[in-house]
Image (cartoon, rainbow, N blue to C red; front, side, top):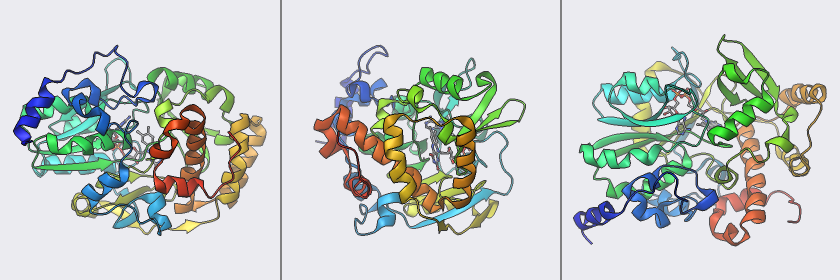
Amino acid sequence: MTSASQEKKHRKAKALKSSSRRPAKELCSECGLCDTYYIHYVKEACAFLNQQIADLEKTTHGRSRDLDNQDDWYFGVHQDMMAARNKKPIEGAQWTGIVSTIACEMLDRGIVEGVVCVQNTQEDRFQPMPVIARTPEEVLTAKVNKPTLSPNLSVLEEIEQSGMKRLLVIGVGCQIQALRAVEKELGLEKLYVLGTPCVDNVTREGLQKFLETTSKSPDTIVHYEFMQDFRVHFKHEDGSIEKVPFFGLNTKKLKDVFAPSCLSCFDYVNSLADLVVGYMGAPFGWQWIVTRNDTGKEMLDLVRDRLDTQDVFSKGDRKKAVQQSIPAYEAGVTLPMWAAKLMGVVIEKVGPKGLEYARFSIDSHFTRNYLYVQRTHPEKLEAHVPEYAKRIVGQYELPEV
Ligand code: FAD
């Protein structure tokens, strides 16, 4: 089939109404694909209907993960990893604003004509509003996480109709998997993908419950992050930081807060992005950068002289802590706050650091998610869980389901 006739074919498809049930049903992560005529490809493209990370890695990076290399299991195909921070941090960014800096630079230099990113609505700072930014100012308006499921791909029709040929998309794993699956249908000359890791995302209502259950002042929070010091840091409007130890979270109440898609996700590290910017493999206060391929390197090179950098390192042993956390999470154990704080202090001193902290977080989430899929969708387990994730989970003893 020619690309012209393919184009015609998907244009005949109709976006779903916002009230319609999604093809992935409760596992839908609201990536936005089904809000466009690209719903035509949903059976193949949806991360929850057709997990195909290894195949898409081959197309995107030239190879899939080397299953004999444990770094590949955890961090995906990569050329390089480092810790970095903006010499001049962008105020109000999630971390130091490396994502926004790269996107602004690509627009400024005319490398791309537009950037898919997520602003928030005027009424609600956490309600995502995907846009195609055409100026650095519009990119900067999208800084900081909207910690909610965000339909980034809902702008795909607009891209095709705008006639843009060179585009940067910023997004999380499930969005990027669907994007890669339809990439060749978008009529672009060059697509750049800047990813962030992503875990434990929520619907807007779920976010409210999380904030109300966990923070002393839910209405004044401007951003939060699960930090490497084993605490959630809530930043409030007045600049104050409230810290709540992970071990003090009300796991029983919060169990149903996370979206079922996120409880079924094994693409924490955004395997299909060209460049990934997170924090969890870096020392506290630094960002963690994973360059997956030459396109990612090209993007990072644009801003290298604006960054302080250091090598990544790995310290400690996560395995005992992960193994112990499995039955505790299953039982919904919540420690009294004094004990949670004490445990936080101890584990911060002796716990895993650098890449070992990233492995701790990946192991904890993959074991939890494996049990979730086994329990809720046993028929999907075999095909949905990628081989690298099966190997990660296989290092631990899991309870009978
Ligand atoms: P900024 O310059 O502030 O830019 C942030 C960019 O993120 C913006 O361009 C915006 O378009 C985009 N964005 C915001 N919200 C969303 C969304 N909901 N969906 C898609 N794109 C969005 N990193 C880790 O290392 N470990 C984690 O566990 C982890 N969990 C995360 C969970 C969520 C829900 C999200 C959205 C991100 C997570 N990250 C995680 C990434 C990390 O928090 C930062 O986003 C990243 O380090 C970039 O920081 P920055 O200061 O460079 O970004």
